[in-house]
Length: 497
Image 1: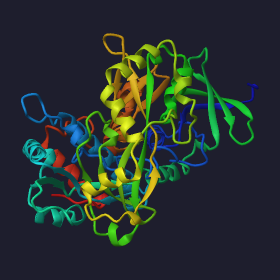
Image 2: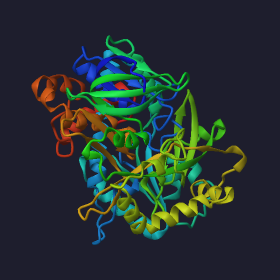
Image 3: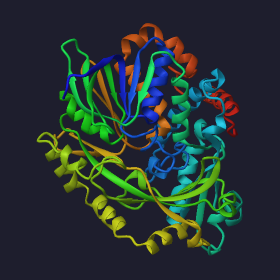
Image 4: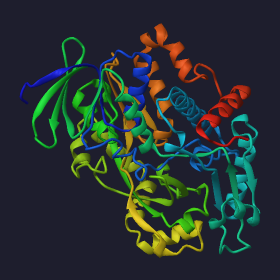
């Protein structure tokens, strides 16, 4: 690479999605003089997983996602994971409310709308599970106001489309939280970028690909960058590097050469949606309705019939139908998976292939599905569906993380993971769900891990201004939850109970 060095920065963030934009906003609020640059390979922000049609979870608050509340061997329902995600979303609500009050974001309805969250199941055995789940969740203050019904008429009032044409004798059940939201993370990313562009010391470059990462003798990093249009190459210097490039973060982490990257591999999962913009249908469904995942399926493949707001229009979206591609990004290369293989991660990948046969069978079945199969799946949710009102669209690419387990073989992870060097000068965000919905919590967690000295030194008061509940446990403080949710609902235009 030609030594065309174009300056030093305090922080360089790779990827112009919701993660990088959230972190950049935090850093600028906490330490305004920081010199920050974002590098993005595509021509605009939020073109990959943060885009509204690429993102599986919009407004995840663990109200309706049944995979967050597994049944224990004794038959009871474990709500601990759901509670974690639920209060993490509260942090997002607080941060967004702070930005709106400050005027950094002009209008809440530019990215967030009130949409009830529902779980819906078919069959007597699943009825029994959902009833147990409701009892466990509604007993906790974080889920105050959760409704439950097995009555066809009541459920039809909540979500007419899922009951029209349904056998009146079919056993069904549903829960509903009216406090739910739909969040367009693409629009939110643009809002944050527009605010950042007004700050001194911030810059962003599009159509630029990071090709190399090398540690410098002073502890910082030299970042190789190639212009996607002119193919010109240059380098940047940075004290800190954040790899928030979605599926590509794994490949970039491997390029860094840090020992903490050893053993990580990626398992890409693609997806397909069915969507309808026909307003006669979309305006009759105001809910995110989640069902139960098929055996062996990844969490991102939980079927749901969603209300979405995109570009000022209401849509209905159903899916996702999973698939398989060797790409790590929707706009990536078919060589992403094979080029990510290393001697230090090959055994882990093989071990996961050996130990996850139900997942592999599920993915093969999904790939082999016909159009008729996919509409049959939608018909389970929406019996009166008219196929001509719907179109197919390709969802974003997810890369599930494979890491060494205690036996030093391999374990498939379905969450989000922060990997950083010993000196925290480089950080990578790997994984998928719940992803965007907990971006604020993830970035706060990263600040605690990687900027601990600054945080404990003088950042905490400002962080408490941005997130009033910071340092307190919403899971155990019912009065604090009530105050936070009432306050943020007023700013964000959401419903309360």
